[in-house]
Length: 223
Image (cartoon, rainbow, N blue to C red; front, top):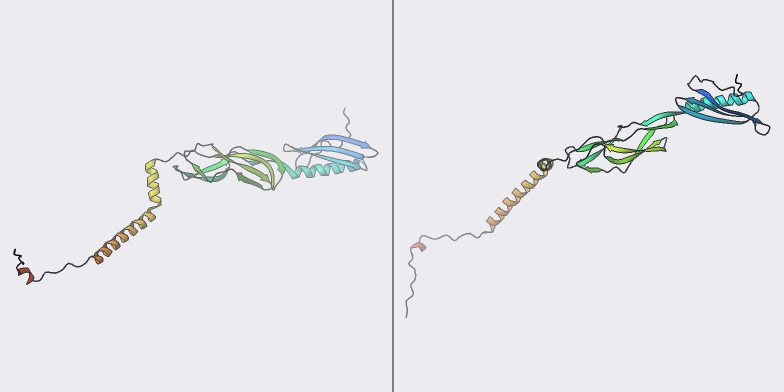
């Protein structure tokens, strides 16, 4: 037979969880005291009451504290491995962008219902192909309710091969065809303008008359 003065021990909450500890105490100066604990969903919370006037008051306040604490906190998976985080542009690759995902999962005991936010750090705006899947491209700070609770690596989702030279040339031409067309039209207009300007500056040739065509050439005789 085991006799325990911690009478709340074994109390179960309707919201889930059970009181599973810890230690009672009493002195004239401190009054009735109890350090209690309760576990719910793998999360243990601890309470401490001091200076209570009676064992009944000590027990009642301990139960209230542990019931409240077990509903406030919980173990949450804040980020799962492979969760999509962002995309990064790719230069000279067969794809224009590559997905960036969480490189690992993160679990923490945090207040229930608090929003989770990721702050990316060290992620470049552009990556150069080729890129292998799983390449680390930065990290993310995980914040719960505005407080930092951990950091995870960020990795590329897929491979991105480097595009071939013909494809690069074709892509450059295709992406700038409007500019190339405008440049060609300007060159043609400039050429026509230059030809017209030269033709207007050329002096007219003298026209020969019918009479002048039959005049004999002058001869010079020696003295």
